[in-house]
Length: 164
Image (cartoon, rainbow, N blue to C red):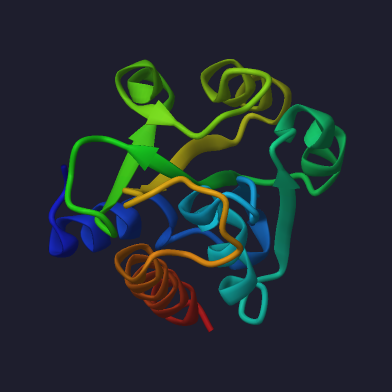
């Protein structure tokens, strides 16, 4: 797991020198299953400060055309990811690492989708995963997941605001 300071520096190396208008943030997850809604809730916080956000729910494969039309240089999936850390911890997950992490429930593997979007757009594609505490029938995030989402939004926003 990337520690919080390492998370920020790694994320800075991936998006810090990119025009924010060339980055597409894609929120993945089910808002009605507690911490599975991490991606869409994080997207809500970011949508105030970023140009391109796409809430794909649990069917990201249905939004490939929308994402491609935005002509991104970077595509960042935002999702709940079980990588064995404390709830609320953040991790950057590259396509080749997806099979080692349990990503929330989707019809199609995010690894396949990431590779497809990379080949179609030429964009760098990765996931920002946040460790969930509990996936259950709830319309709210657990306190640790909510804190992780807030911290992640602050890191992303600060990195993007450096460009302005």
